[in-house]
Length: 170
Image (cartoon, rainbow, N blue to C red; front, side, top):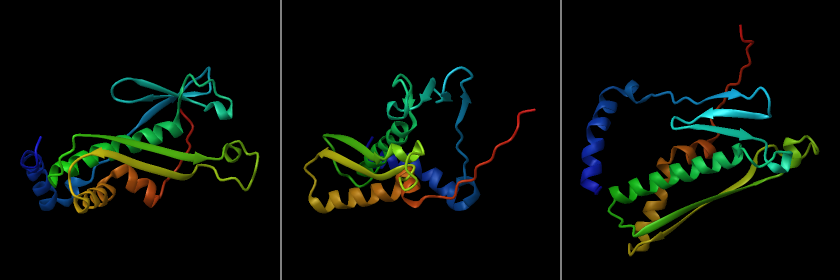
């Protein structure tokens, strides 16, 4: 797809959202079932069932997906798609590209071993390696716009309010 094709695809969607701002508000959902026999959660991905479990650093077998890895994978996926869309929109030709995310965790926090150890990622690093002949100013624009429009990156960076509840099944 080229820039004109992307604009043509997105133009009616953008017009709809301009005319009706509420049309742009969509609730995405994820569902999972807590495994009754193992310390795991079966997450519906829309394509298959992903089974998440404890990371080996917290006693997991390593056979299930680690939710921390899944968070980084979501960041890589969203950032990669966003980078490609932005590159297409601003005519930055990419011969190839790769996206890497890594995050630092102190598992003492999640295991309750050290009260001063944070629970969650202390730092996340996101890197793009691109093969392109585009000038540096276009690459700077590409990175700036990718950061601006990547949903997962902005969610992690901004830390939205999260509401948590627990209710008894009837």
